Image 1: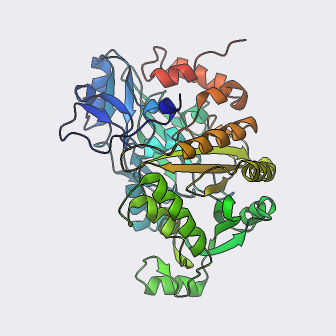
Image 2: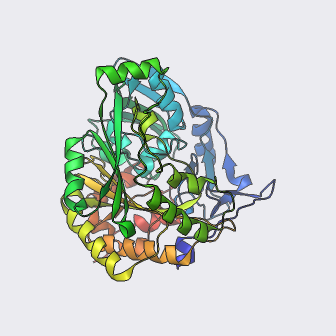
Image 3: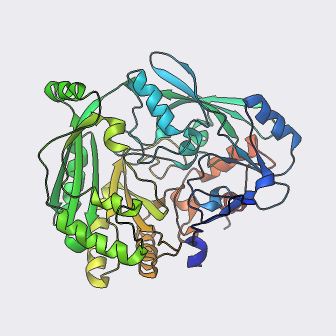
Length: 462
């Protein structure tokens, strides 16, 4: 079962593979002959009208294989990479094609001196439609998922017809985060606001009072993110506020590039070195500058920075990994932190990366892990070894900690890894029945389904 949830990856694929793999190369999605590449919305409509099997929509393939994998030879996988770019804009919004990568969305908005009111996720290679389908989020209690800043969504339905949804539409909370089960998103209108410049203060603090401090950091700062090293009882903390006039001017003088301050702090260096020892042992990666190591070495000799929201927070280093992220209601986060502390002290589990803590405000999306409640997302990572294997001790850790968080009412991030058997979906998502009803209206034949979504959306049993 562990191998099924956390599969080995294939480090080297043949030059001309016969099957499409997901980005991490740990799951096959479809035979190459099953993939279509529409160049326009009209072509997508024609494809759906001409086919009769099930259909899944492929963006950047960043999610686990279960989200996209086809089951039957007659099914189709639709690549949206040609459906991208800015379609329209006004003073308060911008409309992008669904297949637009997030980094293009951010670059276009920055060029317009605008930004999304939502903090970005750390990886910007994913497509806009994919980010909405999986509930991508950033950090900060004054915002939630990227989907919560959507004003309107345009989709091609299973029969090839066009449907449009705005915030007044009764089905909008389902369409905001649809898991790719309702239709093919071709256009997304996003709320925008003036581009903000932030100064992010970085520090190393004791985890003694983490349970209380987490709430304070998120209440006092617009944006906050923390990496918790339980074994060292230490936290690497980022807290960001709007830049002062002087900081903003210095940023402009730096050519609008991320401004790093000269004073550095080495308080995390010993903790980082110990963490790197674990990572080297687990991954057997010879390159000291390999991507997994760079995700940790950046904590050494850290410095405050000033930049726009994307320069400061969209800093993820995409590297193959098993990433588990579970949302807990913010009001329960302190008690959960204390429980993890006790468990860690008793069990001394093996981990080679810190616990990532990001909090968001409540979401309006029915299937968002933060639906109707400010939440703290607890993130856990195990990197793949050079040969495509995973540390058994690392997997034992994330398996145990996910079970703990599920017992606390946690909701897993849809685009990451999780053990579905731990969750009673109808209990933790009170609007799941309403979502099913929307799916029945928009896709009564369940064409936008696969094995995973069919299992998720089956009717609850008594």
